[in-house]
Amino acid sequence: MAGGRWRRSARAQTLLPLRTTHLSHTTSCWYCDFKISTFNELLFSLGRKHARFLRVWFAIGVGFSIIALIGATVILLKESVGALYVHNGNASTGMLFGLSPLVPGLRISITDAGYMIISTLISIAVHEFGHAVAAASEGMHIEYIAIFLAILFPGALVAFNYELLQSLPPFTALRIYCAGIWHNAVCCAVCGLALFLLPLILYPVYIHGENPMVLSVSPKSPLSGSLSYGDLIVSLDGSHIHNPQEWIEKMVLMDDQTVKGSDNLEDSRSVQAFSSRKGYCVPSYWVEESRKVQPLDEWFACPGELMAFKSWPCLGLSLTDSIHRSDQNLTGSMHCLPAKDVVKLKKCGDGWKTTGTNSSSCPCSQDETCLSPLQKPGLTWVEITYSSPYSSKCSHPDRTLSADFENRESRSTDCGGTFVFVGDVLSEAHSVQLTAYRPRWEFNLGLHLPNMLEKMLAYTYHVSATLALLNSLPVFFLDGESIVEVILCCITWLSLRRRRHILQVCLLGGTLLSIFAFLQVFMSIVLRYG
Image (cartoon, rainbow, N blue to C red; front, side):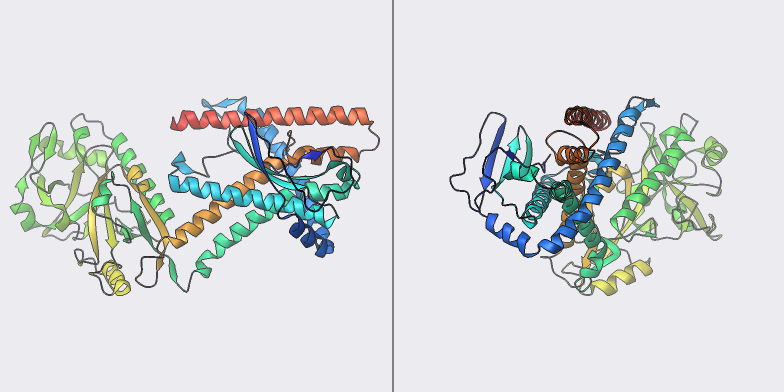
C-alpha cells in the first residue's frame, strides 16, 4: 500500500537547494524509486504565498489526525482481540481492513483494476501534496518527490532536511506530519459529496433513478439473448425498478422466497416439480385446448417453446398444503402453454407480493383458471419487463417507455417487451452491469460517462480512506510513527531513553497487530471465495 512517509535526510546543511540536480534513482532487488524535483519551486511558492491560511488549515488536520490515530488504534486492538474468538466457526474480521464491501464478490475486471490504479495515484498525489505544501508554509524547502515500489507495494515520499524538521516546535512538526492524513480525509469528503450531488450535476443531460440502464451483459448469461446495451429495466414481476440497487435487492428477495419454498417440500415426487405460487388467470378455453403434460425422465416436459403450468384450487393456500391436496392427480391438472402469451394475462397467487401489497391471491373470474408455472427446486420464475428507447426502431423513447409500463398488454413492440427467466436469479443479477443514469436524448457516446464518474469517485473515496487509515496506525515507516514520536516528545516528565522504549513498543505492537489483521482478512476472503 502507498505510504505517506518522507525520507529522513542526514545532510548537514540547514536548507536544501530549491532545485536539486543530478538526482540518483535507487534500484535494488526489492526496492526502486524515481525522484522528481521539477515541482519544488512551484510547491514552495504556493506554500509561502498562502502560509497564514495553510497553517490554520493544517492545524485543523492535527486535531483530526490525532483523533484518527486513537480511533484506528482502538479498532485495531478490538479487531485483533475479536479475531482470537471464533463465533459459529467464523472469526470476527473486516471492520478495519474489510475489503469485501469495496469489491463485492471480489469480481475485479480489467476496467476495475484500471480504476483502482488511477484512484491510487490520485490518493497518493493528494497525500504527498499535503506534506509538501505544509512544509512549504513553514519555510521548508523540498529536496525531491520520489515514487517508489517496495517489493510489490507502490508508494511515494517527500524528502526534506530531517535535521531542520527536528528543530521545529512540536506543533509545527505535527502540522507537517499530519498533512497527508488530513488531505486524504478531505479527499474522501469531496468524493462523497460529489457522489451525492452527481445526479444534480448531470441533471441537464441525464435522467437519474427512473429506470436502470444496461451497460453490458455477460455473454455466458441467458439474459444476453434478451437484454442488450442501452436497454432499460422497467420492472421485475410487475414491481417497478428505479436503480441497480433495487434490481439486486428484489432478486435477493425472490431467491429467498424460492429457498423457503424448496425447504417446505417433503414429498419425494414433489421435489422434482413444484409451483412457484406465481399464477396467471388463464381463460378456460386455453386450458381446454392445451396439450396435457407427459412425464419424461421424472420431469414434466413440454414440446417446443411451451412451458408446464399447473392449476391449484387457490394459490393463497400454503405451498405444502396445495401439493398434498393435489398429489393424487399430479398430472391431471397440468397444461403446456406458451409463456410469452401467458405473461400478458392478469396475475393471481401470493408469490407476486414483493412490494408489500395485500391484493387478493385469487382474483380470477369464473371463466378463468389460476395456473402456476412448474419448475425445479432452487430455480426462480421471474418476469423481466424492459424497454429499448434508444433502438433505431423506437422513435419516441420517453413516451414509449411510460406507455409500455402502464399498458401491460403492449409487450412485443420494437421498443421493449416482457420475457420470463427461470434459473438462479442471484448469479444472473450480477451478470448484468447497470447504471442508474440514462441520457435525455438518443446518443451513444455518453452512455458510460455517469458510470465512469461514479466508479472513479467511489474508488478514490475508498482508496483515500484506506490510505488515511493506514497512516493513522502506529506502525513503522508510515506517518503514524512520526506522529506518535512527536506526541511522546511533548511528555516532558519522561526521560529520552524511556520515550524511545515506549515508542519502539508502540510501533512494534502496532505493526504486528496490523499484519495480523491483514492476514485475518486475507484468510477470510480465501475461505469465502476460494
